[in-house]
Image (cartoon, rainbow, N blue to C red):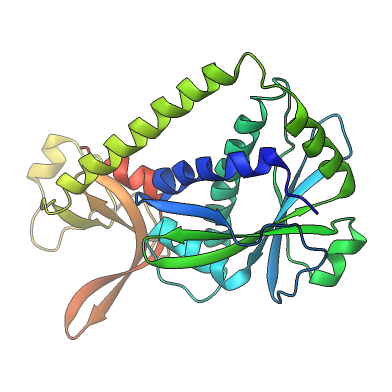
Length: 277
């Protein structure tokens, strides 16, 4: 079955999602030139959106191990399990992924909208039960790593996509292209600027907590004095870089030295903002 033209057109624009989230260049390409009727992947994660005011749905299949790798790249972590933290990072990736697709669709139909992406941990057998029976396998390349994903369509979605593909682009198409060009240029500039400062040294320290004291009480401090901090002994301590909290964790001892085992980390975008000082 023929691939809807509107899907072909939107794929290259997904590359800006890679630049924005991973801060590196990437590419997206179609692996097969026709829609297939089945998919033979195991251990998959399925995400989908509905097209508002219709019963049509568009889904994307991911290999679970690829999801772990992609989410880990976003957070700058190494993990072999799909933790809640990685799921949150991948959800943000999906929001931008489907958001970029929808933006392309508005070139043909200005008021088209998607529902919020949903993520399901299901088997491939369940896909047809849900009505998804056509698949388009694509490749996603980030630096030297290759990933696979597959679009999944139900028949109602395909009907809409074929219909949109035949329509003339709306008057907002040129406006959308201008917006996209500005975003792509901004993402490129952000990446180039970040590359220039990667070797700059920043002050890093661990904050156990803080307290407010009157000057007269500070002057009374001496050997053996106790200062009560604003957190309990069970709370994580803060990892502070350039005055910004970027992670939290627990204090441990490594070869007679204190160290910090990171347990929570803020998003990559927040960390980059924090480096600005």
